[in-house]
Length: 221
Ligand SMILES: Cc1cc2nc3c(=O)[nH]c(=O)nc-3n(C[C@H](O)[C@H](O)[C@H](O)COP(=O)(O)O)c2cc1C
Image (cartoon, rainbow, N blue to C red; front, top):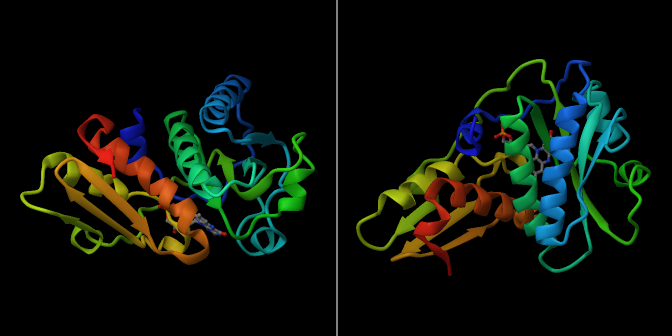
């Protein structure tokens, strides 16, 4: 399964089986995390065997079965949220290609609990991604239309159409899809107006658009 296939097959999954993530897949996930950390100056880390990073409300009301998660953390720079969104998107889609399911938890997480499992200090934790073998594969989210979130100046090229299609598959906080993507020649801008989650959603959206459109076809303006 490619990352592109994974975009179509990935859906939020909150309930997991008790099957542990096999050692070889843990190694693959850790290698991908190391690439993201190195390339973007982040401190993502995989935690297995506890649910310390999930908030108590989420545990009580939504899922008692989370047993592994990725901590979304990094030094508190102005672009931290966007980078966490971009690299988190890479991780959820990569996990999907390995046959795993995920749940982005950007509101109902427990930063203190997560931090107990981290060695690096001085970072800001802004969410976790629960990961494991889902009890189901989830369902596609309700979606806006391409016309609602995009504008292209002139005749719309196929790569832009593909990018918007991929953008609509992106997970967003509260499924807001508060995106506006504009194209002019090969220049593209993406904005996201989802309040507290705008930075993270923007990073996730950029990752999805790039995979759909093909990075070679356009430039972020
Ligand atoms: C930044 C962000 C924060 C999120 N926070 C939560 C959360 O706190 N609790 C929750 O149940 N789901 C949370 N979600 C999951 C979204 O509700 C879910 O991704 C969205 O409804 C779209 O569904 P999909 O992931 O199946 O595409 C969050 C998603 C994102 C991207």
